[in-house]
Length: 220
Picture (cartoon, rainbow, N blue to C red):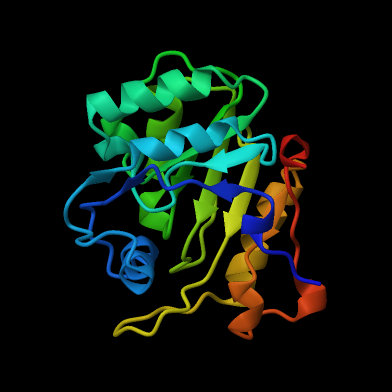
């Protein structure tokens, strides 16, 4: 059975808002669909959700599913970082498309940092991630894939996630199976776990038996 990543990683939307304005934005569509905020264009900080981190139920938290870490205010960042620093036995994931705007000289080992790459011309984000954010664990998510991405330095990456666009919009690009397996093969050579999101099967790009859904051991 194909797995859903949300069954293993708890989405905790501490901040809802992003001003990057990607035409395929999943966060904006989701916020509108579930009415999680009145206006996605207004930054909203849900400080009361921080108490949920103390739950014994969940081990791994994704804190930026509907925002980008690069746009957090200093006040929000300090409050969130303080809270998660009190939970050293859990894993916290932050995602960004703008690592060049972030400067973190030192982070705890249980904080994982994740960049999004959608095409070959965004590979420079890997360089900025490593230069600007000092961490033990780095991840890359290819969401969605718009072309065949070659020659990526994955030597210090702990996990990659692959997804295809499923929303209906003008200019939509569906990932191709050869693009997906090209990334998988690059990661597999370095023993990096790869997770293909269920949308790849739902979009009829791969059959269920072709789906590869691996996690870092720290998440299990």
